[in-house]
Image 1 (cartoon, rainbow, N blue to C red):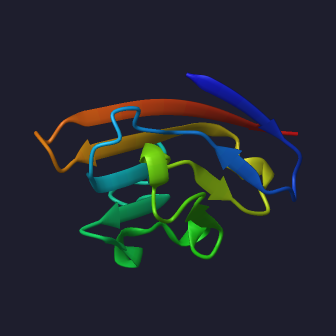
Image 2: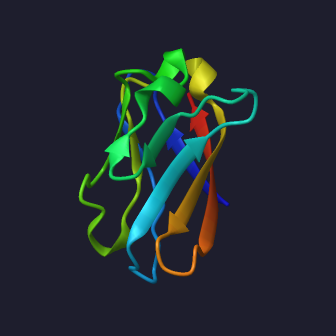
Image 3: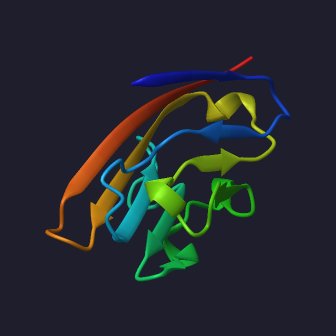
Length: 109
């Protein structure tokens, strides 16, 4: 687990990458307590905004939309106190359907 600290109002990058650099089919950024909704869901070559939780609409993007080198880090804009907590990155590769998970804890001060 990676720990990141940010001040309220800042933009913050939550790191996640796939070191194998294989083609990526799905990127899920999620948090406990969002139900079936996601912080960000990238699937089949595009963002799925229908499955995005309303509190993150317009506030998140991938650091590198081309995911060069397997970088699927999340940029969270204008962080708020209630963004404090655990975020999970899940990557599913096109090849072999392999899965990678990373956890990042964000502390907003």
